Image (tube, rainbow, N blue to C red; front, side, top):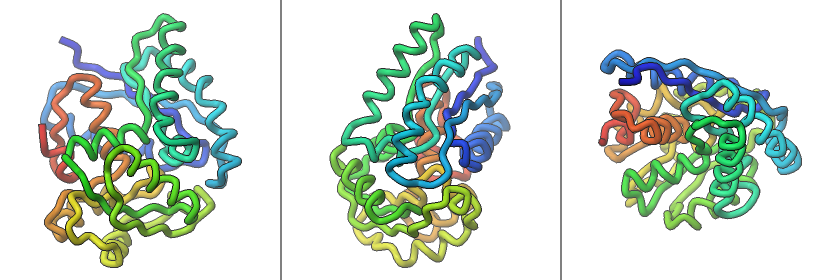
Length: 249
């Protein structure tokens, strides 16, 4: 039985969060299971979260997928949600198809996914019909994220955006501040709260506290990414302390 898994991420060059939050979740899982994980990244240039820089960054994704398949990672994922969602409704499926072709052409067998698709996967796993979310993006990009999620059959009741264009500044935000921010969000009658719809905006330390306070499932794109990875690998996805999505089979 396999016990060592290689986790690959395609990361914006200015992202400082996904290479900490994904390992933190999976290292916690190692306390309860035999499987072990190693972590591998390939980076795409991006400084500011603007449509132009996101489009340019996406063009580097295929190179990154090829590099990670060279390492024969077991699963690879993009580590930028808005770069995918800003390109058009359902675009994560196109990216995943492109990655799958790169992997196959390279003679590898890596499972492929995107953080954008992982958020949708996680929300459906939770049975979400109505959600509210928070994101650091400018208003036009946040509107695209909302439209993207709603196109997948999930109503976004409310969204709060912090309008931070500098991606490094997003990564420096105190995750515990989200516990105050969420008080401004309309969470009445929603099924799930997405504490961070952005993989660069840190949220992991606040997920469980927010869920305990609100009394409804709370998640983030990073948590959804970890869940999707574990599901693709066929592993038990229960990891305590990070919200409902990592509590259910």
